[in-house]
Length: 167
Image (cartoon, rainbow, N blue to C red; front, top):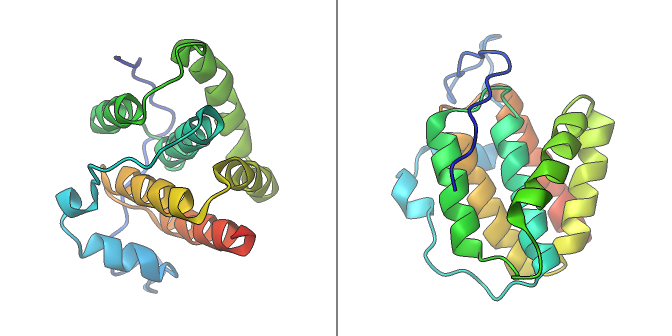
């Protein structure tokens, strides 16, 4: 599966140790992720997933791709590989799902309230602590592919807070 390249607005990655205002980003999880070799984050074991959980993980990965408003080829390739690993129910077309999911995610990143509503919907569809942990692992990896911005660090905090509040 090859995705079309879309570049919204170039954003310079922020060094995870220091942001533009000289302060460290708030995400402790992202600091740990930044210190972990990227390959160590890539899990080979996919938990048993039902289709709504697969779709929720796809939404979360898309959110990770669009969070910095720049989609790199590396992110696209990683996204395609992860979707392939997740599998997909034969009765559902991934292409049609992506056509619906991308506008939803792009709309969600416009305001913090919309992002929160999307995260709550994703969390409800994941509906299992182990699947949530798996999804966070994949999301964290997606954030690291082209450098990590402060905005992405804050988003990871928001994802973790939303998911674990629901768990």
